[in-house]
Image (cartoon, rainbow, N blue to C red; front, side):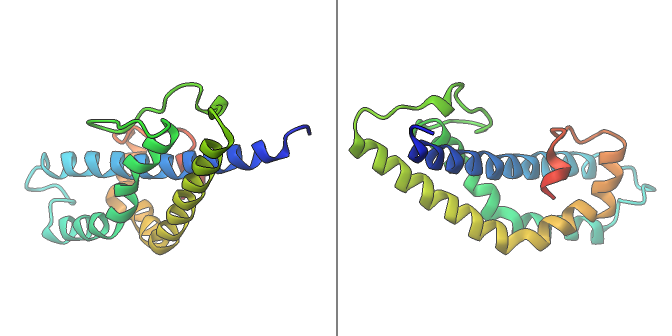
Length: 157
């Protein structure tokens, strides 16, 4: 009520969080699918070149969104680089207070640009996310609880 502009910045940060969660879920799904594909027996119904090619094609098509994961995590970490698997977000990111108005404007602009980039990228790959989520091998390993996903992932897809 007293600082409505701050809600705009926080709203953008939450958009970034949603996009980051989607990218992390995709990475988790692909890591597990490749693990399972590399450990299939010769008589397994998923041990076909066709399945492997479909998974490879979906991974290639979804790479633009997964590449954004590091940028999204860095934005939530106030530009701090995260090495290795960019899967953590600094606690307290919601309470970020810039040192002056110029910093606040730069951060808002950068966050806004990243949110727009994420939105465009997500719009371009939405059908591929749906295909991955609906693919028989993904459904099989999700139902067998072999793919460790956050409880909220189904609401994103």
